[in-house]
Image (cartoon, rainbow, N blue to C red; front, top):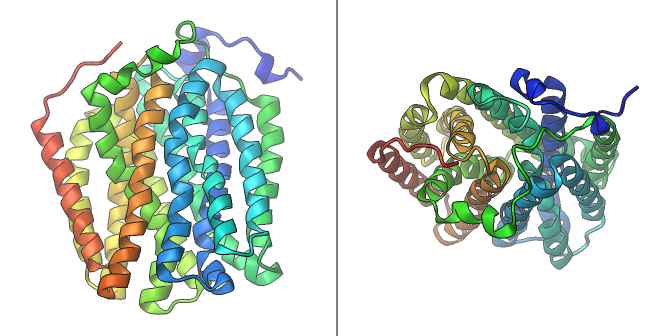
Length: 396
């Protein structure tokens, strides 16, 4: 058997696409995202185990998102320079180590320190995306990136599986299982993964930061701050919110959170396909007002309205995720990795702040309504930007 990592890729193969490499990239993102998701999925159990306050629990959930957000910038740059395969292997090793360490924390301080470094698993998005975008032509980028984004399903696996495993076999198994799955996938990835053909020589660091001066980067970052940030914030905070608001068991809250993640993840490839057909900007013109309306529903403390609001938001932001990343290779065809890192960092930060805000709002007001009002207003602000900006031309 020929080691695909050493196979010589051709531009012709890129024009046809490469389902194997897309599957390997998507699976890697899913495995890493499961490790990241296990932190929030296990938080109701961890909260009781370590006697955490609501605000401490919010901090512990948000901290991994911080490194996962900021880490996307250097990982995207390194993937452009060294190749997605090499960087992704290193990220998986770090993610496995973090999951094993999480099983052994015995204090809030340890939880914060280990949780911060586990954030590298969320940052994996920027390191592996080259296996999706690099192997597909421009007219199929929306589809490829939408499928790749379906790696978010790892969050659903963690949301449902981690509490169930911890209950059945003991607390550490909520983390050990995903560490073992990722280790098995690492072996498969190392054997078959191959970097796509380069579009040119590796860029110097100064060149990779050029997109920071382009307003399109910041606008895309704003859009992703809402769409992916909203997904991360809801996915990591729903287990705690549902157990607190409706006194659900961790297993029941995890199952409902898994449903949210599955819906959002399923909608993401559809968003990319629709963006291929009608344009990412047009899809976002629908996504943002719907997101605002769904956030308003979440302000009403009823299981019916919270369920409808959460599922409706899952559809909207899932479509939005696919649409935003259709625009990245369209506007920056020569810097997909670095721009993905920059935009992805904005999206990750969008998942960092809401849990902290919700924790403060809950502690001060006794409810979560004000936090969802702010989310609705931000979605309307994004809608205002997308309908007033003119269509922009790609940047070489």
